[in-house]
Length: 126
Image (cartoon, rainbow, N blue to C red; front, top):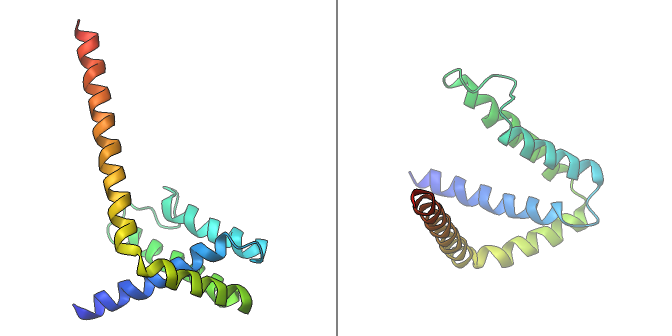
């Protein structure tokens, strides 16, 4: 199971590099578009192999999306890559705090949403 943790840390670092590169003005438009395509493909219900097909439906996402992301990483200009890696290293050190803050905000948001729905249902009942 240690290999799974190492794999996660590798992808986490690379995803932070890609996030930084996506917002860097010196990143070529073609690479930004390729990042957008990868993101859209990941969340899109339309796939090469439909997700309804067991295992094969998910397998195409597991192959296509990392291949697109690897293509972007390999084609980043050297200066952008260095800047993105430096940013990813700075942000990566604070990742537990960032995830805790995002989680707390999400829990609070869901709580407020549930309270609003509950209040609306009570209002309708009167």
